Image 1: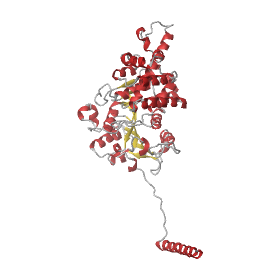
Image 2: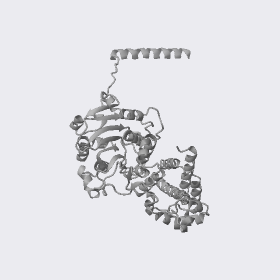
Image 3: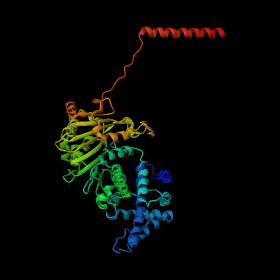
Image 4: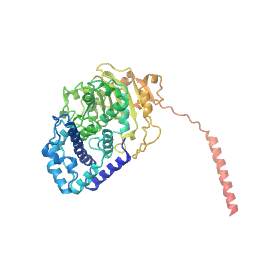
Length: 484
């Protein structure tokens, strides 16, 4: 776990970037990322140097004519010389690094060196030099803390998924899933790779038998992600690298336009929080995706993409805006019909509207289903999350009463839920009933609210009480007047 000291160091570096003229949070993260990467290359070269004593065939990251670019050398240079070296030699060098070093290197081709002054560069390099980047766990936690400082929403509905919601979804799906060699976990809109990172950590902490059964390369080949934003793909790849996944499978491409036969029926588990807003022209979307439901709305297109990407028997947990659950357009109904009647819809977890504050106030839900291509469920489990452990205002302060432990417990023991009433926090709804309601999946359609009956006094009794009160008021005023 990251210490308060490390948090303080990151905060100071962030503030230094900010006061030095870089005000865009994403740019700060990118430039910070480049420096962490460069320092990590130096650490990797040191390990190679030690191993070379036993194996002289190992290839250097820094060839002889590039040794002066190692962190241990550049970090001690005068500001102006360091700045010139970064501009003219360092960035061209890391842009041309072989992909064998790390998948992050492949995304450096489009990177830009945006630190504006030699003074700022020297300050930041001095501060990064003090960071503990030797321990992979600490390094990963440090980077997650850095990413948590991305405090503004992006375009097209992009914003960070709360980490406690990610952890809940990961645990819901990985608690008892059989994971063997060849299993693939995928996020088609991975952003900073939050779902993938939490899957890695969950397996390490709660499923150690998986680590024992798989080789290092087989474990690395469990995780896949893609994002159309090159900056996000770059950050995600770096994040994976810092969490021990040296060969991260992170793609930077348009998942809709680039979808092909290689992506179809390819993944065993999909965890995602796709962008909620935006639309695309039909020409920008591959035909197999439009075959599920012809639509321009990205939230529906992502559901179609997920359905096509999953293997038969594969499972999914995806966050959607509430409109997906009850929207009345033809495309909304078609996508719900596909999930309800042609796949195995397992659960709908309704979340309160404040979960994504301060970024957005939209109400959302988690859809959990299994791809079966022809076999539907008999019933669907609904849960009404009312408290996620944080206040539902813009401040999002921790509070008591989180429903998350209850959700995890009930989902893992669904047999005990079969007699639940619709007045309770969770209950089952027969699929036939959902089908008869035009595939409406909104919780309020099925939840029964018990209204408490309140008995009021008769009008005559109320008037009598008012008169008695008025008498007391008059008596009090007479007493006060006598005192004057």
